[in-house]
Structure formats: structure tokens, C-alpha cells
Amino acid sequence: MECQNCQLQQRAFFCDDCVKKYLRDYRQQTSHFSSERNAAVAKATSALTGSDKSGSTGMETARIRRANVSSLERRVLELMDGLTALRKDNERKRERLQMLRAKIAERRQTLTAAKTISVSPTASVSSVVISAHASLASLSSSIAHARTGLVQELVEVFGISHDDTHWIISNLILPVPGDMRRYPPDHLNAVMTSTIHFVNLLAFYLGVKLPFHVTWTKGKLGVGVPHIGAVKGIGGDTGGWARWHQKHPLHVSASSSASPPAPTSSSPFTSIALPESTSSSSSDTGSPSASTADSIVFDSQSGIDPAIMQNQLITSSFTTGIAMLLYNVAYLAYTQHGVNIPLNQVASGELLGNLWGICFGFSNGSGILGRYSHETASSLIPNPCTFPLNRLPPPTPPSFTLEFGQLLQAMKRKKLGVGHRRYH
Image 1 (tube, one colour):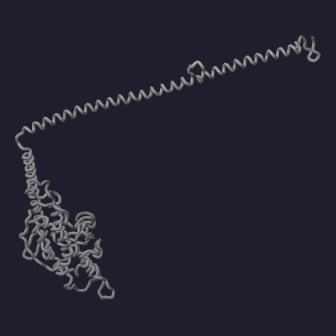
Image 2 (cartoon, one colour; image 1 turned 180 degrees about the vertical axis):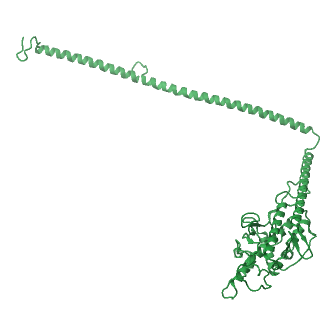
Image 3 (cartoon, helix red, strand yellow; image 1 turned 135 degrees about the horizontal axis):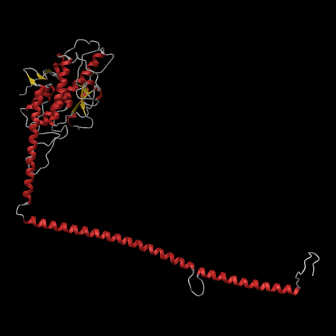
């Protein structure tokens, strides 16, 4: 049969009954396949979740179990490692315990052997202490003899001597402060430099720390102008010297300013002009000896030449420097011989006389030169149970009775007068 529209032949045509039958069969097949699909999905879901009625486990449960097993295996490995470390620690402790037991056994044997010795341990220790003290006494005596020899050589090198009226060092007369106006500045500077070197070397050989320290303007020993003052941070209230840390000159020079009026007897230094020092006498405010400089006040209405007033102020600073040097010598005598030199004797200015007494002994001294020092031990203490040996206390102890302020006032009252005392 031929179609009038498409001109195709042998095209199948269905009747209504055939189409209905075909549709019914198609729906049945679709329903069958849908039920099979649902059954397969349900089976797969039960296989994954393990929720089937047979009681078998699913994949998720198996995975959780495998994860638990792996965690337990790691924990077991950690425990095994900890057990291995604990066993090693136990081995070390066993070895240490064996060592301690061996030491205890050895000490017990030593104690047993010591108990069998008939000599008393106290007597043995006492003999060792006495032997040590004897060695220290011999060493202290040797050091003292060496220091004495050095001091004697030092006196010979500097040529310290005494004639009927003067003390001499390095072939130069060292005048007392009241006689310094009779000597030229070059002479005074030379003899003061030699004296400063002698005092410093003597203190160095004896190992004594002095209250006042000498410095030089050029920063090197012996180069420049010498100044003296206490070192900041040392010393206590004893002696009243610790606050005098400002430097004072130990040097004089010819006056380079306008010629002042003729010198009067009230000031032995009016013919000498001193160089400007790094310190001024007014810097020691609050100290007892500051009155020496503060007593001279510049007053434009007083009618006194300011140049003279300035010269007196510088002279006062030089006087303070000499007083510091005298105080050092007095303290050095105390450390070596236990002698407190009287205030009037120190204020008289016989510096070389007191140094001679230190080197060759005072008539009322009780010490031996070189026995007492800040650097080494002192002489042997008679009691053999006392150990170690004592040293000199820091400067200055309460038993050193000289006050620096009183020394400066005494020099002012005497107007730096002369007083002589000879030591042999």
C-alpha cells in the first residue's frame, strides 16, 4: 500500500486494539524494570550500611573497624617504644646503684681502717694547721724583709738625709711650708716632684692604699702638673677626708700677672703664683677645710685688688694639697708602726722627717716595717686555731685619730709655721 503523503510503501499500520496491547505491554515492562531497579538500589544500600536482616556487617562498619585496628596498632608501637626506653633507664639506674654500693663499701672499709689507727684525728688535723701557720709565718717574714730592703734602697736612691736645719731629698732642700717663700718656684717644683714620687713608691712597695691619690695633668706618671685629691667612692666618715675628692695642685710657678704689692708676713706664698688647677677651693662646699678658701671673699667695694684675692685663693688650694700629702704620710706611719703622729707635728710640715720615721722606725712605734699591708696578709696571729691571716682594713679605720679638717685648721692657725723634729 502506498501513502499518498510520503509516497512510502509497506508501512505498517496498527489498529486501536494493537496499539492498546502494545502500550499495556510497555507499561508492564516498565513496571518490572522499575521494581528490579528498586531492589538493586535497596540491596546496594544495605550492603553499604549493613542494615540487612541477615546480620552481616557493611562496608562502613568494616572501615570503622579497620580504623580502630590501625589506631590500636600505633598505640601499641608507642607503648613498645616507651617500654624500651624504660628498660634502658632501669639499666642505667642499676649500674649507678652498683657504683654507689661499691663506693659505700669502699668508704666503710676506709672508716674501719681509720678506726683501727691509734693516732687521734684531732691531733693530726692540729699538726697540719700548725704546719700551715708556720709556713705562712715564714712567708710573711720573708715578704717583710723584702719590703724593708726595698725601702732602704729607695731611701738611698732618693738620697734622703738631714743636716742641722733641713731635710734633703735628691740633693734638694725640702722646706717646711712656712719657709717656701725663700725658694724659687723651680726648686720647689723639683723637690715636690721628688717627694711625691718617693711617697708613691713607698706606698707601692709596702702595699698600702693611701687616702689621697696623686694624678698628673697629662695622664701619665710624672708628666704635667701633679694634683692630689681623694678618690670618689672610697672611704667612710672616719677622718673626714673622703669628701675631699676635688683635686688640688702640688705645683708652683712664677707670677705671670701684674706684680702685686710687697708680700706681707700673713701669707708666705704671696710671692708665688700657682697655676690654674682643675679644682677650685670653693668646690669642696660643706667640708671643714673649705673655710680656708671661703674665708677669702671677693668684694668690689672692699678696696682690695682682685688679683691679690685670686692669688690667695690659689695659694689656699696649694696649701690644701700639701695638707693632703701630709695626711697620706701620717696614715702610712700608722699602718706600719701603729703610731698616731700628733696633730701639731703633722701640721708643722716636716714631711721628710715623718717619712724617715716610717722607714727607720719611731721611738714609740710597735710595728715592724712591711708586716701590715692591704695587698698581703699581716703577721702571724699567735693563736694557731685562727685562720686565715688578717689584712689591713680600708683607709681609714677609727683607730687612726687624725682628722683632715683639724689638720687644715691647725696649719691655718700656725700660719704654716715651722716646727722641727729629728728622727734617727
